[in-house]
Length: 319
Image (cartoon, rainbow, N blue to C red; front, side):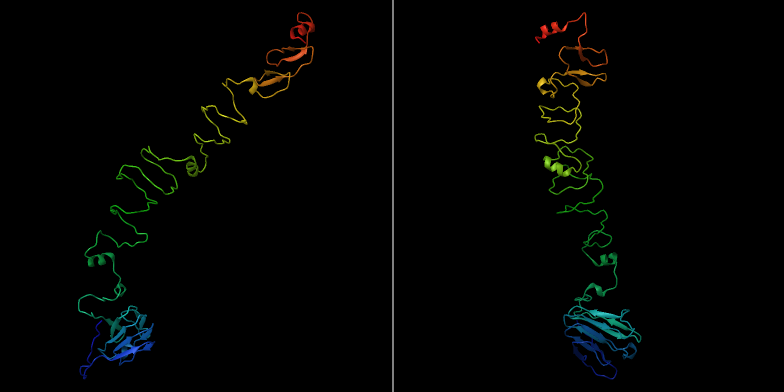
């Protein structure tokens, strides 16, 4: 950065007075060029009213620390209480308007580039549109976009190399037909507005992980069903174990040996309600006697006359 040379009335051409400082410093009225060669500290300007008219002061940060140039008291430097020089070889020049200080900048190489070694923080607030007018290779329009949580309005993304489509909504009219392949874990409900003819291959264990309120049964696996209601199923040679309940209507082919054990001598009948019941075991010399419609038969003593006597029954039964 080039620093100005000033000539005061009555003085010949002189080089700026140079002063190197490394610690907090209060400027003198006779100072011209102050060079902060190292360290981080504050340099305080003289009172604006005391500065000779036309006197230009220059402060340069030749070190790697941060130099804060403070205005005197409640005065300002271009409206701010201070100026921060936090880039090596950065500098600031200022004059007095009698009340406050006014900064003056110089281009070191005369190339027309403002503040070549400084950041854009030295400029006033700039809108996206104003910044766009300074660029020659931009694309698109609207506001500037930064990396974290930007809002893009109808962007043309081209072919992204990668992307996370969480919370993406809208239609997919322009999606290319084909299969969707994913190795990620899907959460939430997966719905389709078209045909999902091919879902890929899944194991029962994988489906059990995906279904949260049911237990899946495999076609070729051994599974335990608990409190399940099967509606009109076709079971091929199933081993039912010991069902807690069941309706055996239309069941055929039950062998006598498969019936539940009972008491020797009891007979099976149905009571007035149509419920299966057992006829109590009779005693010797009793005969099975009908009690009429709606009542189960019972073993009773043989009635006299017209029937077989006990002797005849014994001959027939061999007892």
